[in-house]
Length: 511
Image 1 (cartoon, rainbow, N blue to C red):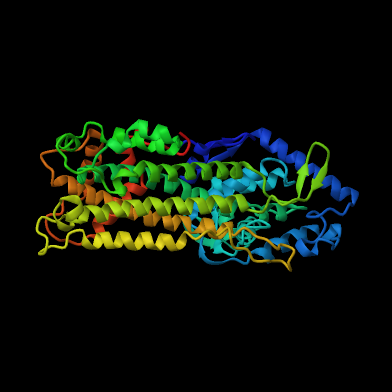
Image 2 (image 1 turned 180 degrees about the vertical axis):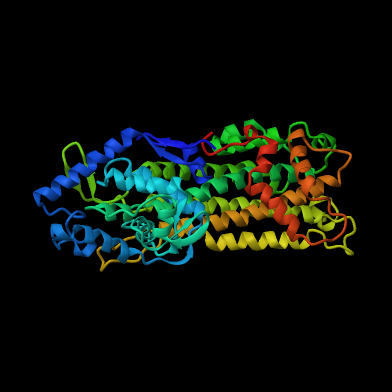
């Protein structure tokens, strides 16, 4: 995987996708020059003795407390240690890595006032695979993701724990093994590291790219299920979509047409089918999945802007030496984007589950009950559909918007918060639930198509079915279903199903 170079300009969504999947991040010399300019503004303020928030004052409700120059290093250290108050399970390593990359890009804009040495340490930690141990709970998504980011900053000063080579150890040892040394934070640096939306944004971006794979896979399994049910591709006609005009609906219908193009199963009943219309789970795929795609694209645009932005406080203006206090740390845009993604992934899974239910019902599908050759003696896909239903209902419960909640903090100084951290943190689990549903549909749809042999589906969908059958044989008699479900789900989550069908057939977030 090619590393990403940050030269100061906004990184495209494709770069953030690569970073989320393990690419490295390097800094151009121009970025370090810009960072030095911001640090020089902070140094000049300290030298003049002005009282400026975040540099030589207390924080939050204590902003009116002036701190002596001799105590400025202690002030920043105390800030980091006091705010490292997170609890709960640790953030997954891939999310922690993306947090670091997001913070590097934000600081690299030169508006945070940190020294290039501090930025290079964080960059060195990412390159050297020194990953701070960051508890996942403790942020309300305003004034920055303070607690999670404090745990990140703590590792930089040699406090707390970090992982090196996958092994957890005291952060100071992890730094040493990577040939790095802890930093002594200068004026404003602790605050710059703690303020920001990088925890919420990393969670949301990681989930976004996982949801994208589930979405694309569900288009494949939905098309295969349509063939398994001997459904019609007429509702995917381009003229229907253009009369409504939604881009996502148009793109999804085009993908479904491509996926089913050349299907022998479809050709077999094109002119001799006495059914008038298919159930909505087949017929309305462009409308439901297209709406989900539109929402995902809007969320992706918001998150890409946030990923490239500066979200700490106060901000350093290098053109005139001003330091301006504002509220860029408020993560409302991320909270809204996370809520939108929760709704989208909920509906993607819900529609797929309805197709599984339809396929297992002989009255609707015309296939053997529960997709087993000997129903009664065998239960077939009976409980696989129940599992899909359970996962969909769990996602429905988790899809309640987080952004509508708020609770005052910091002695009412921070009296409205976004709850972006909550909204984003649930998404990875929701994506995994929906991936399992798509995996179950892949199994059920392939099983349904098996009953139509010697007729076969389209070349694209047969590639998908062949891939599955290399790992999971046709269900002739009851066996333990869990291993089959996990195998099929892995084809979804790794992108293997997408790759074998062809990325060019499927709409993407940035296509």
